[in-house]
Length: 255
Image (cartoon, rainbow, N blue to C red):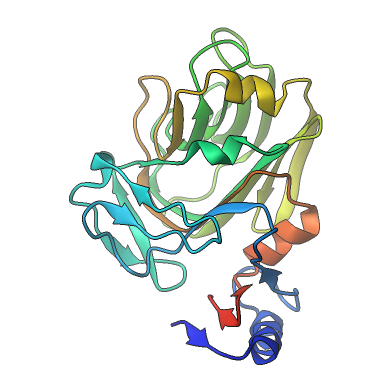
């Protein structure tokens, strides 16, 4: 439940919640969602899905509206409600996510099952060096892969053991400044160098998807909650704060 408080009280309450072990963190400072935070999408799903629209709680105000959400429902999420993905639904993000110097995508994810190549997200197109995606990477058994590729072999593949189906896991990916990295439950699992740039991804981006592939792969099945997208690279400390589950914005404790 959201609590509207005075700004100072909100921050104090958020620190108290974090120190009690909210989310995956303990004693972690809250993440401050400000106008200059670089966040261009923050979707809590607590309002449900009405007329195929999902409300954006970031200052960008980029509500998601797509026919792919027709009939979508919310179910109990990590905090409040989350969006049910049944193998048909997906979210199309705004192109503003590619207008910065990097990319951060984070979400609480509870897969019902991990279909082969099923995407948490897929940004770009199915062309060489034109796509970054996070999926059940079938090139390695039971591994989650954060890949930058197109036709042929991956340019970069950051991998981590795939989360257990039915269990909430905070998953975050960052890309930019010559690096690509994945975090699980607020902790860095792997970071690799890449010479692919955000400009290359943005140059011919066709699909900016949550839960869907730019190839003909199965869609994600499960529940996602608190999807956060930024057009810059978050630091490890910022990822830890987001994963702690306490977001403070404009005097409100959002989670």
